[in-house]
Image (tube, rainbow, N blue to C red; front, top):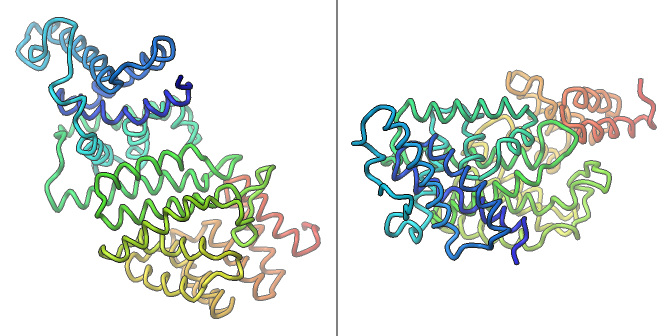
Length: 418
């Protein structure tokens, strides 16, 4: 017998497939999404009591399509016309999926749905929310909790996103090249942001939000299954797996942050490391080089080292130099500076870090202060390092990071704060 958790996982996996079928047939994203949510709710109530139907996907399509049919009939009756979408479905309540819908491979609809949710007409925040709701199957309350905003605020954000899609009258179809490739890059970036928010929560009491990292990995697996030869899709999935492999060792029993160099590597998820390493090795051998592949390669070098002191820093430095040429951005420079410090000494790393001082995007970012503090500590300038650790602690909105940075500062002065 399936547990409630099994039912939830199944419903989340089927949600984008069912929504894709409905949007393809009815061409009304917002109404179809509401109908699918109602069908998912009905399944959550009925399936544990009545048992799993023979074809769960067909069951959901049938129930959701009935909701759509009822709604369309009501609208058309009010408008006194029945020559549009409602007239195209059978009049009885025994609606059945179109031939092949329940067996149709989900990859076309799922990828199309992802691309629709990541349309450039939407803001990045709306893309994240709509992807998690429509493709991830998360409830509005779950998404609001993950991003630490009130449920009403998240509901408004999702509603505005759906209205934007409706107003732009975007067809539910794969865009032509080269727009398709550009939109895929947006999809990958949204999945990357979802994973990052789960891997290091931007604020709140917890360092990690495993529900978001799991969802990002699940969705990226789906995209990889659809596009197995795309090197950047494989690279992103590898990066997620290689990073999430360290999750069991990243915090102590009390939630305290544990730095990479201090983690118990025996706790790392070896299955994820092997899968991620295999993915990135294959992608680098056959695909055009891209930033996700390079980041995954760096993660693989870290994960393959049995001890922190065994890390191949010269290889990591070479990969960061290449990454800065392929996809330059301040966060890459920040990590590049650490690699420089590990190979050429902390002063060389600090010199590279100084190039970010004039970058408005990093001027008040706590990670710039935290990395500078770390390199100053390596250089033996403990007073300056302590000051930078405390500045970083004041600027972060993550409680675990704040406590970690304060502890680093306290350690440099025997625990006496000013």
